[in-house]
Image (cartoon, rainbow, N blue to C red; front, side):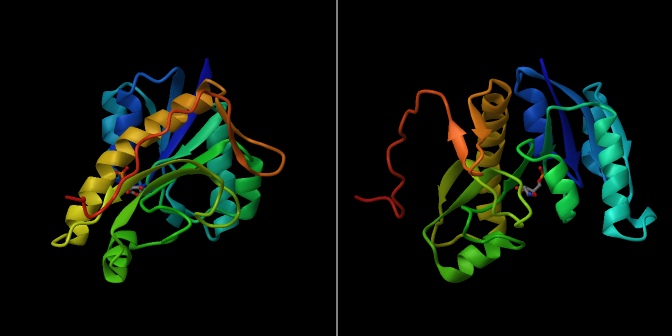
Amino acid sequence: MKKIVILISGRGSNMQALLSAGLPCQITAVISNRADAQGLETARQHGIATRAIPHCDYTDRASFDMALAAAIDSYQPDFVVLAGFMRILTEQFVNRYHGRLINIHPSLLPAYAGMHTHERALQDGVKIHGCTVHFVTPDLDLGPVIIQAAVPVLYNDTAQMLSERVLKQEHIIYPQAIRWLCEGKVMLNAEKKSVFNGAEIASPALIAPHME
Ligand code: GRF
């Protein structure tokens, strides 16, 4: 059975979705760069080993990433899953887990890489927003896409309302992506493209606003 380690920084609702999804893998540990991350307590309640590696204990990114990698490697995971992990990782760290490091981002990448995605989507007046699970490469938030969910933006949306609707979809697509990875249905190929080996079923189009 494949093994995964999850990295978090805060609330951990995506981690919780992964823990509750009955995935065909062993979640061996949850590691946070913040000792007070709410998600660590949730993980403990699920009987998962937890570790805190506070980034402020390290003088630079490289030494923090080395300590983080040593902790991760002690669990020998097949995949390292970032679930609201709010640290930029060094190229060296990212390359160490090439094809095995996965992230979820609250936008339809490559649109709105970076922070404040919901505010920026509202500001631009787009009618469709969403979330993306992708392989992590050294280009921040721009690695090959595994799965995306599109969410309509409503006329009276606030960033909070929109983020809640997007988060619901994150909790659906992240477990699906990790399931595919563990089953060997999706992988990163030599051309750095995400390839899917399963039978694909097309969803009908999302049109927003809804047509009468
Ligand atoms: C999610 O919106 C995720 O996409 C982003 O950070 C947020 C983390 O939320 N990377 P949670 O900690 O999983 O609740």
